[in-house]
Image (cartoon, rainbow, N blue to C red):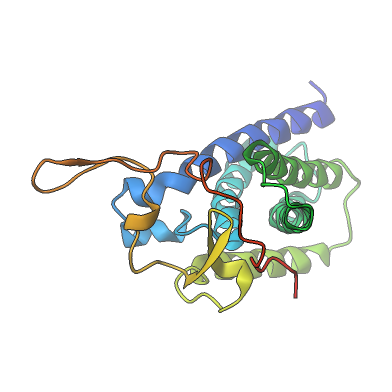
Length: 228
């Protein structure tokens, strides 16, 4: 198998892995009964930031594993993977907010399948960038410096901003198309619980279900989506 095909297959595999693992991390915080250490890698609210964080960590894990098997086939390996990890959250946010702007301007309820497609698009675009860089001739040595900067910035950001979130709309809980004024780890998750829960008396409290916004009326034209 030639190197370009081998690298392409690895990057395609990464798209599936990140989409699956990231989607599981969407629910992991609740499934671990809101265990604080899980907040490092799992989404803790419905903000745009948390939805990009849960795809960053699986992508980083894949990059480390892939290096073991393709380091002799790829050029510019760590730079290429760093650019993938930067491209994915950037494109997801830009495309997501663009779509939401259009939805609210047109008075159309956002579509869950379309939002999932935005996620897949961002992951796939990141891996395409990775493949293009990995299959190029070796780049100048100073790319190592930029790769180091990219890894440092993303690792620090995704490790800390859940716990000390800026009061900015990207970090604000956006539950069922409505900003709630909450950031980071929430004080009360009961209004947003997805899965059924058995209380201490053995009573079952139903959750809202995975598609919890399906029955939410789209009647809030004052929601702040604008990128400003």
